[in-house]
Image (cartoon, rainbow, N blue to C red; front, side, top):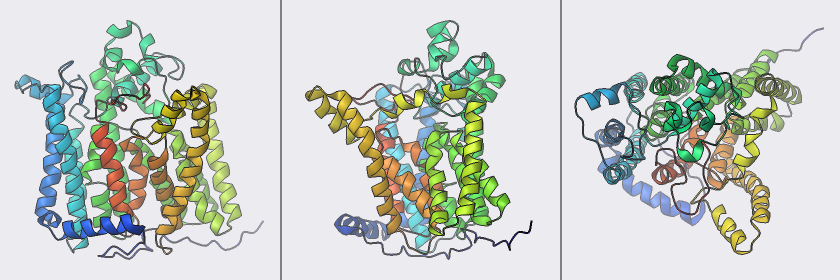
Length: 493
């Protein structure tokens, strides 16, 4: 059987030409007002390299200080009461223990400084600042190498992940066996670290994620601090690996490095918070890059396998699959679409079915029905409570938000220049829209949008994605208790 000539698809980065000015993107009056503000700030000292880098360092330094000093049980909800190596060293040196009020007073400005530092570095870059991209990357490596040795800040998810790993290490199923059921109950050192509202929540992550938890728990044994430390190291490694891929693939590696590897806001929400979304971003961007490298059967199958692995981490990685499918549908490349989809479906099904079976999917419907404050969907829930029809309203929300997501994603996709790679634009638009309209959304959910944005030319979506990360980061840093405001349901990780 003969095969036709193989065409090589263009590299997503190679097709880009670095630009020093953001292309004008129509967005109405709000976009115009934001543009005025941005132009004012870009002419301020904030848009110079030294102030921008200094603000980034100050923000991360304050967050690290919280991790070192806010770890006494009951002292604060911003950091877990577990001592990783540098935190333990700080305790031996009699570092002060911060109260909850002092911690909050530090967290708000620290997160804001990270945002301003990021904005300043990007503005300086748009004005001609071109630091050595390798130095940018290795600076990020040094920062990550430090923060993974500090108690997780802003999220207690690592405690839940460690508990799920311990459950798997003991031979149980983390999708049916609850952290509260670990031997000893609340006195178990793993259970003691998990927020009480999560102790009865099964894992909502995929089997690939569970394997990472298991590896960490096998290394940690009965020592939860060691399990969490291994999880932090793996998260940091995944974050840096994604940054390395961007460095090697981007036409403008400086901008890509600033948007991802040296992004202080992402270092905080992903690495210091120990979030699995760093793994999703790594596997997702790898799948996207392979899909753009070539159009051979091998490229399509590898892309499908990577999509399956990504969905084996978190099921919302389906947006990556949909983003990869968009250009294939536009090009009517049905054979490629079929090969990629078949490989992705087989790998995803195999990962779920032949590991923990359908149990791995059972917690998802209940978790997907939750609404977090201050989502506008909470207004619908309040109306439903007053009308004594909460079930009907919840059903309505479940129908409406995916439709709104697709409409917003289409709008965002069309705002981007038509000459950018469709796979990057589609994935960025889908994941960004999901963050904005999903009933349950947290700052680390923006990871895939950021990693794809790093390979796109400069555009005004950057400012909106920054705000979409900053606002929930300011609202939900209470040790992973993402609904720490009145009126919301008990959260799941």
